[in-house]
Length: 404
Picture 1 (cartoon, helix red, strand yellow):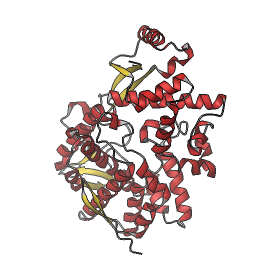
Picture 2 (cartoon, rainbow, N blue to C red):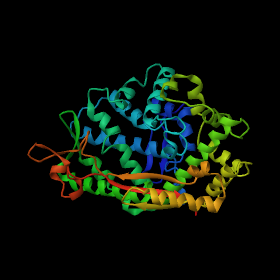
Picture 3 (spheres, one colour):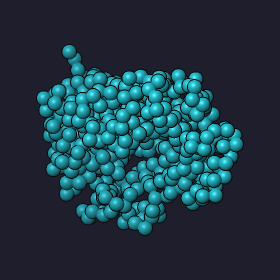
Picture 4 (cartoon, rainbow, N blue to C red):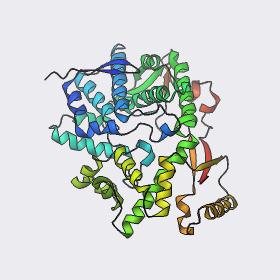
């Protein structure tokens, strides 16, 4: 069978699959599941074009990784074919652990477990099926491989993951502020002292990337209507779980019911049954259940499901300071009068939280700029953007959602 395939991507054009093992991983059921998981969760309720999937994103990120490897080799950075395949597989499979609606339901289906950890578990299981062919990819993904710059290409403040999702999410939402010069940035990447750096002449492209990321967070990823929709969906699943705990008579697919009736934690990921049910869970399971629950005999569950399906979303107020006890009390009184529900049901309709937006973190894996004189400097030392300084803190806002 010919495994050298070409995919047509609306952003990059033709993407070539060069290695048989890449094709084999794409064909896995665990990977094909990503076709059924939206990249931006419920953001299509705000930007109708945001219908793209995790599958499209990881294929695009793999394409950018291929470009990065070629660019680094052109600068006499030695990358063996084994390392090339390893880093391509690492970026290809980095999101395989995402649950339904991507980040919208993270830490919910599996309590307190992030998708990166689930990706590691799934990669280990796939590796067993493939007789150890993913050994190097897993080492790179988990940052255990000595050549650290390969992991930084997969996960850092300027990795192929972020470069693709900014360009892709900008394209599908129509938010032009997210458009960045990806090709230019990749050509400016270099390696020094075993770490990924950016050549000095690429600093303006990096600044544009960071500012684009900041804009995209406020305009897309932290859009107030998306936040309201996310919290409504969370409330729906919490109510469904409460009903199933009391009595096991609520409709759900066997895969969804498994997680609604059990408290699955990180320690349970070694269980074959947990992995089987997780790998059969996607957006369709959640939406199918919510459509049916619109007609539930439980008033609270039915109302919330009708609100989501018909896009009658909660109103959301955003503030620069934490929500006061007085405001929360006022909202609760307002909802009680409107809905005539029991007071113990209020938490399903009123939620509070905070939103954090940081274009660049000065902690941990910082970006290094390779100066023309051979010196390495922190980005914060060379950038002219005021909010990249060490003193800068992430911008935080607070929100409260309630029924209209």
